[in-house]
Image (tube, rainbow, N blue to C red; front, side, top):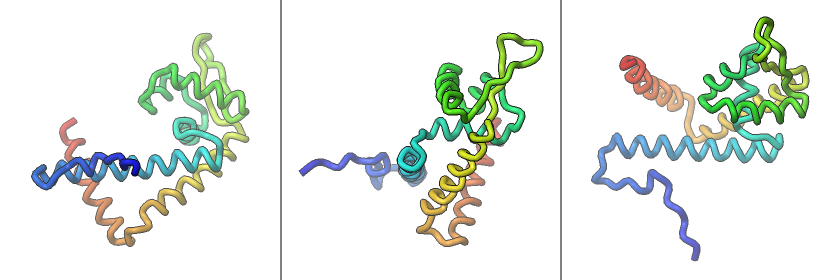
Length: 159
């Protein structure tokens, strides 16, 4: 019989602080949802989560973004952004636009085809996330959102 790999939450024991067990549960849930989204993006759209994320950033910036801004927003190296951008340009989903006054720089923005493709992916993505939380009712979702907001606020106060 093949051993089932232990997720991070399963490694915690009752003698660990409840906060650690909660953190591991949050991390495990995040990983499970992300795995589902990655699989669905690959199967339904033949794309990856980083490509989806890059297109989502561009959807929010109709005039496009410079490569260094994309890199900063996505918290990845410029090399990663360049590789993804090259693929999306080849597929006609994004275009590079020269930046006036800076011959070395350019902005990247979605093409019409890119806008439509992203809209289709975003609708599906929303449905996958809604399905991921189908085990909770509306008041539970609201309460969990509020509780996690308190955690988030705590960190923002430290900045």
